[in-house]
Length: 555
Ligand code: N01
Image 1: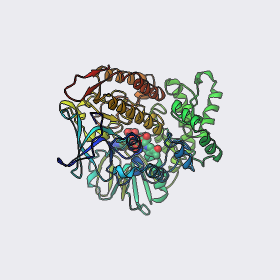
Image 2: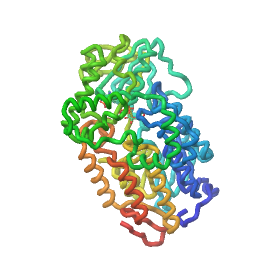
Image 3: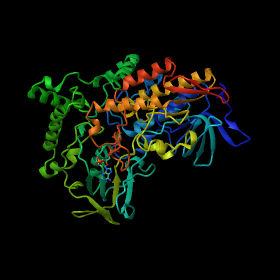
């Protein structure tokens, strides 16, 4: 394709499959990339180690897994009115089986499966400078040469298995929420179950396990400001109106990154008296979902404002949990909402059960696992089953584990050793023709996931079309653009309280990971900027024509 022509898929002489674009991952982004790029005549193939399409929604099938954000009826691709009309969500926060069914429906609607290879892991990817293409090898020994390497690897797909002494000696069953058994049902009745982790996954799974197990012990390191999700059936009128006015709904998603009924307030907490403030908080609490985070404009920027809402939530936890000693262990002390907001359905009530024990690891750290359970500094907890709800090496982990090798043998691990460096969270200096969906320094997890995917995928498609039209073989950002982008991302984050909290947004959940804020705050501006950049000649990128012609710099 470097000469503007697609090559045939197979180069028979060398036994190497030739593609225009190789996509890693068959989740939300990978499916869109395939649909979009194949639609413009490229040869595209998607590889995924999972047994089905769906990405995170295939792996995370633990009891209680559901969209923990009021997405409905908008937890979907937005680009196709036909697709929107053909699908009906029934709940505001669809459960995992529904989302997986939806993604399978998308794969069928656009006939995607014929270009998706499942049960196949991309093991290595090396940029071949002479060929101006990526050389890729998969777990089944296939070799592929692709002009473009598209990482649709997911932001929360590289599970974090903590390094706890003795964990491998534990004789019971161990499950990670992000790698839950696919075929068989996990039988918990009559068993003593331990859960480590109280993030979104832990908070979702804990009430379900408590109802099923003989006894549940929760090992908590950081208490959470979990908010009531208040999931509910969707209002049929809202669904009908949305479908009829999809253009307008899509505009709102593009502008706000979320459904319109969740637009943040423009009011400061300091404009209200204490009584008014508490009434606003109470109203938002009753609405559920993210309403509390959005009810004043300064909750995430002003420590005093954040203190007010933090106190409000702590009081709610105290009201809900009957035993004051247990409630005390559940008091969060970081800035409210500066970890990814957790939504709950009966989480705090779970601690009122006689068959649930809460262990505060700050008071009694784990010494070791044994064959029979866990030993902390204060005692022994016998277990039959352990659930690790310990999260992910987020945003950068999945691509770092593949560790692509760019120009001059530069490994991504080395490039990102001191922190992720990208231009627009899409591309990396030294890694030509590598595009990332939801990479570090993009809005990723802080914007409507499907719209963000479509916007980035459309940008990639437009860029590739531009390259074809002009006979260009490679695209790569220039170092100055990468440095300036990184500075802007940090500067935006530093206007908020987010960087002050240890979270997976900052890499602080993974021992040894460089601390940096990995998300671009200001999603709609990002997407606007992307498309202006494409219209104005790709400022900050350098293109190379096929070998033997001088580079064209557009920085
Ligand atoms: O992971 P987390 P998660 N010893 O990193 C604890 C998305 N999601 O899987 O806070 C003891 O948030 C850790 O403690 P601490 C969503 O974006 C979406 O729950 O680091 N504890 C924390 O309590 C979410 O944010 C949905 O001190 C250890 C927990 O494990 C993201 O995925 C559902 C430990 C990890 O929490 C990740 O959520 C679920 C150790 N060594 C998730 N190591 C839906 O929308 C870690 N912890 C459906």
